[in-house]
Image (cartoon, rainbow, N blue to C red; front, top):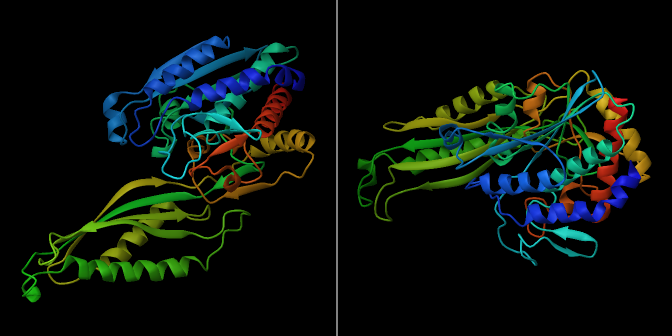
Length: 401
C-alpha cells in the first residue's frame, strides 16, 4: 500500500495542484467549472465518474449559483461494507495577505500553497490515491469504496452530502469526511445563523422623540446578546477540543442619513452549539431573548433563521473507524494521534444524521491553525499529504478485509 503511494506521489501532487488552480469560491458558489475539471482529472486516473447535477432552483435557494456533485464507486470482491469518503471542492474566497497567488498552487519549502490546498482539495487527492492503492492490490478485499466529491460545504452541505443521501444516490455503512489535522475528529460544533431586523419609524434628527429609534432598540438587543456571550463562556463541553458555546454579531447595517432617526437595523448573528446542545432549543431561546430585550413602543423585531446546523455527535459504531485510523496513523506518523472534537462545523454531520458512523480524517498538519485554513497562505505539507494517503489506504484495507 505504502509503496504504491510512494511510487505515485508526484502524480498525486500534480493532481492536487491542478485542482487548486481552478477557483471555486463560495460565495458566489459557481462551482460547476471546478467539478468538470475534477471529473476530467479523475477520469484520467482510470475512475468511472458519475455526474449528479443539482437543480438550479435548489442551488439558488441555498445561496449558490451552480453545483455538480461527483461520485466514484469501486467494488471489491463480494459483500462487505460500503465506505464513503467525502471531500468538498468549494472554498472560501482568498481574501488579502497572500504571499503567493492563491490559485497558483505554488510549491515551496516542502508545501503546496493555495486556497483549498488544506481544506479540502487536498482530500480529493488523499482519497483518490488511497483508492487507487487499493485497486492496485485488490486481493482479499470485500466491499465498496465511494468517493463523494461535493461543492457546498461552505454553504452548509444541503445540496452536497445531504442531497446525495436524500436522493438515495448513496447509502454507505461508514463515512470518512475531509480532515485538517493529525487528529481523528468524532464530534464538532453546530451553528445557528440568525438575521435580526429591528423596525422603527424614521423622523427628523432635530425631533427624535417623534420617531421610533431602531438603533436604540438594537443597542438594547446587543447588550443582551453580549451578556449572553459572557454566560455561554462559563459553560464547557465534556468533549475534548470543543470548548464553550460562542456568540458573535458579525454584521450590522441600517440607518438612512446622519440627520434621520434610523428606521431599520439589520444584524447577522453566529451562535455556535456544543454537542450537548439541541439546535432547535437554542434557536427558540435566543429568539425569545432578542424579542424580549428589543421590546419597545413602536418597535417591531423580526428574526429569520438563515441556517441551523446541528452538532456532530459521536455515533454508535464509530469506534471501528477510530480504531483502524488510530492504529494506522500512529504507525505512519510515529506519534500519538488525538481523538477529539473541533469547535467548527462541517457537512460530515449529514452522514451522522442519516445514521451513518462518521469521522473526519484527512491531510493536514498537527492543527488546523498551522495550515492557515480559511486564512491567507493556506497550505499543506507534501509529507502530511503523503502520510495521510497511506493512513487512509491502510484503513480502507483493514475495513474491507
